[in-house]
Image (cartoon, rainbow, N blue to C red; front, side, top):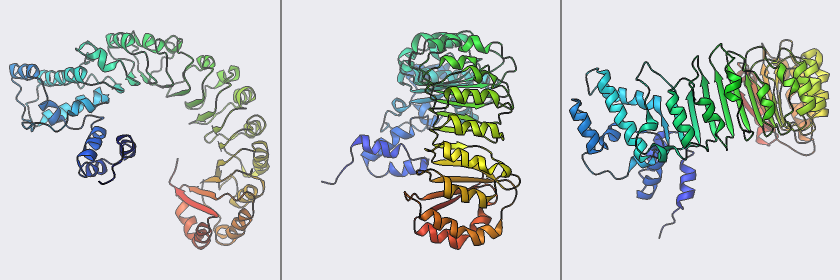
Length: 457
């Protein structure tokens, strides 16, 4: 009898396939592989023709009464109960999918579009148990769909673990979900100009919230503090982004926070001076920090447990020195050091003895590649193994043609012997590879280095 993988093993392998055609190919192996593949393919709605063909007799009668005639290809019995496999639902994508399907089936009639869309959501609410729901309002497509009022909605939503929404959807939906969904682990909110009543309540009743993402699209920041005032301290990952600053003072109550991602342009980090986040391990900025003093004080209070720090392209020597002094347990760092401040890199490497990876700008007024690699070889900690060099402007052709081999030989003689992963970021990558191709191939083959190029971050 041929060996067959257990269901759990095969499911774990196939669900990591990113390309749909690969899953389709797997479904042709045998019936067992087919069932596992189809379950994964149908985590999201996969075929609107088939979906509409599964309408109940009641829904078909509603379509008939509204003079809606749809040709489907599901006259034969189905191999699987496809609808039961659906775990992720995007209201917006579903509406778009229905409208696209109906485009070739029906005259352009908004009422008929709404009827078909409503019957699909009724069917889904009655048969599906969702893990993820995306509900972003796009009123120009179709009016709000009152999904929480349909039969079966409570069972459909009670195990919801991930919810993405915009703040302007119908208040009643938020209120109903507040009564049903108490174990959402990941919540993503796009704050529009309208904040519907009920959103604050939905946030406050979550007892197991781990990940919170807030995208701020409105210029009015006054309503934000009351909205997030009752967030539970179970949150371990927080991402704040948008065109306008969200007040940060509420973060101080999230004492279990482990990951903080901030994406605001130019300003607004003054509140960090008054925060202490003892469990914070990852801190990333997606824009430059213009006023370093509050962040320096934050490092003094909360930098000890940081493992990953990304300062984007912030250029401030006092901030770098604070990193060396207060963030001794860093494993990964992205920062900017000017060529005239190269000794600061040595200070960082000496102060952060657990550092394994660093991302730095090179060229122009930034670190010279010769000095940078010399410092990395001579002063980097024992477990250091990854250097990312992001080029601004050109690079030193002569160095990469003639001086790279001695650098790699000295790295080879280090103890312990770690392979150095060297990544060149930006348009210079291919040119550097060509200029030093013989050396790179030689030392890659012997396992001394790994070399790669990345277009940009």
